[in-house]
Image 1 (cartoon, rainbow, N blue to C red):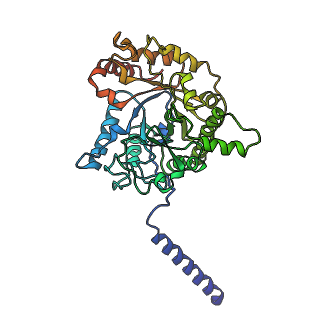
Image 2: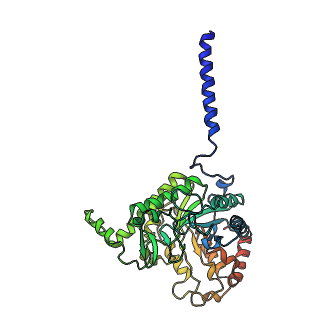
Image 3: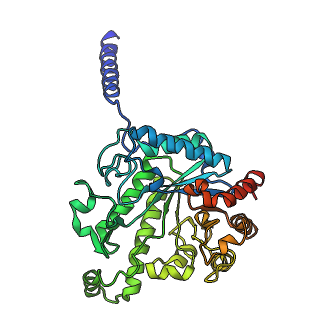
Length: 401
C-alpha cells in the first residue's frame, strides 16, 4: 500500500511546488487585464447623458513644475465642478495627435504630460481619470482624434517611436498639417488597434471620435491610392465614394473591435451639426445612423443659437431627428457653451441669457438621449458665466427628464 501512495504523494508535492513557483514569479498582471473600478457598471450608461468635453488644452501640464500633481489636481477639480453642475459624463481627449494619455503599444506618450512627446510621465493619467470619475459615479468616454498627427506647430516635434516616424507611408501632409492616410490599410489597422487597446485595458465607458475625418479642401493627395484602387477593382467607386468607404471601413472595424473587447463599452461619433457639411469631410453620417454595425450613438455638434441667421438650432436639430435610426443607435446633442454670452452667430447669443437652457429643454422635449457641452473651460469663462449659471441652476433642480 505504501509503495502505491508514495509516488502519488511525491507527484502531488512536485506539482504544488511548481504552481507556487510560477505564482511567485508573476508579479505583474497581464497587459490586457482591464483596470476595473467598483462603480463602473453603475455609471455605464446614464438614463440621460449630461456630458462635457474636456480638451487636451485643458489638461496640458507641460509648463507646470510638478506635472503629475498638476494633472491630478485638474482632474479632481473637473470632477468636483461636474458634480456641482449635475453633469454625469466626462468626454476627455486622450488622443489629440496620434499619441496617448496612457501607456500604449501603438502610440507615444502625449507631449501635454511632460513637454516632450514620447516621454513617460511616470504614472497612468487615463487610469487616474477613470478611477476618480467612477468613484464619483461619473462615466468616462475616451475622445480620440482618429487621423490627425500634427498641425504646423503642435506638437513641436514627433518622437522617434511615433508610428508616422517609424513608417511615413501611413501619413500624408495636407496644407501644412500631417494626417494618417484614410486610404492606408496600415493606418486603418493602427486606429483600430488603438481603440481596441483602450477598451481591453481600461474600464472606459465609451470611445468617441470627433468630426475630423478627411480634411476640408484636401485636393488630390490620394490620387495614387485611387489609381491603384481603380486598377485592381472590377467596378471601382467614384473618388467621392472611395473616400467615404475608406472612412466607413475604419468606423466598422473600430465598432467591431470595441464590442469584441467589451460589449458594454459604447462607440460614438460627434460630427458637424450641419448635416450637409459632413459630406465635405467624406463622413457618411446618414449610413452610420441608419445601418447596423457602425456606431452606438451620434452626437452632432449643433453649435447654433436659437436665432442664428445661417441655421437655427431647431432647424439643425430637425434634420437629425428626421433620420430613420437603426435600432440601438442613440441621438445626443452637442451644445456650444463657449458661445454663450458672446457675439457669435451674428450677435444672437446676446439676445437672452437662457439660450443654452432653452436648447437643453428642447433636447428633452424631442426625447434625445442627452447632451454634451463644449467645453469644460466654459464653466469658468467670464463671458459665458451668466448663461452657465442658468444652466447649472436648471440641471441641479431638474437633473433628469
